[in-house]
Length: 428
Ligand code: QV4
Ligand code: CA
Image (cartoon, rainbow, N blue to C red):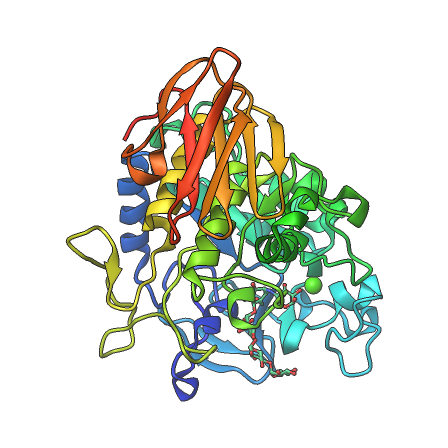
């Protein structure tokens, strides 16, 4: 959507999180360009998920004109592009904080009724606001968008979100969705057992981000002995069919929300192990991060001379250039996504972990092993039917023979990509 433009801060990435209107003009282009992208992606089976910022509009003090021509004035709470005026923002008397900002995560009303870092907070209880947000979401649905991330859902009342979503129509069959398909929704709730708002409050409005998973996985990659405790319900982690998991995201990879104890592309060897373990493991719905390189944590994506977002450069070997990291194209990560799809619906079995290497099967469809130091040699139960399988990670350069007892000798000798993944029906 239209958002603030901040030339004095060199157009930081986070300017997109200060909405001006729901017109689809942004740093990335025009409504026509967006619609065209979604249409072309749907045609080849690639779905689009939109980061929907619906808790607030711009920060206080922000004044200007956005990409589509809509003006904005944060202090006056005036956003004619929607339009929203002062009456559509959370009444001051509902916010129990001295400066009007979110400053006490132990109090629910403080988290949800106050201004998150000075961002003008929409009053989601109003029919007018619910309708305006639903209008935005329905426009996305009409264009063929498959799902949304609800930004700052932790700062919204679950009942308000539920009401907004109840006004959203089914996904259009004209874009290839089966009749009756609903918008896929995941709620951004940073719950690290550190406040009044918990992930389970959002089970009725979709999936929820599970930030404890990022920490647990980072600890597990540092010390494989801890990997067995990755999913810790005793610690409040979201139930399996609601957990939205990831190794890192755009905030915690650069010290913003939920940062600390997170592995990122900056340590590629560890990162590949973390993504491999996440994708091999059945817990939750997994998201693969794709980044751009940065030195300054405010710095926006690679850009053209006019600061518009630069195209992604694809090198001859399929990797990215021009400042784009493209983790999703890294060999291990792309291959492990194939593994996850091949074993979907199966349980984790035959779990084995000696502190330096870990292995498990996924039902009778796949088997995964990973060695922290780069090598292992163990005979293990694979859960698979007897036969010869090939390691998809090294593009089938090595074979693994599973005997009639379901066991196989698992050897790893690869420092950079110390992983074996075999699955029924998987080839190079
Ligand atoms: C400044 C001062 C405030 C002051 C305000 C008054 O810091 O004290 O009250 O001015 O005018 C930017 C600046 C921030 C500035 C604010 C408002 O960094 O300094 O406040 O704008 O002008 C992203 C960035 C933020 C950025 C925001 C809006 O991370 O730095 O703030 O975009 O541009 C919590 C939440 C969680 C949130 C996380 C970051 O529970 O929901 O913090 N995560 C999501 C997104 C995140 C985004 C937002 C929410 C806001 O993932 O990227 O914040 O939409 O954990
Ligand atoms: Ca709010």
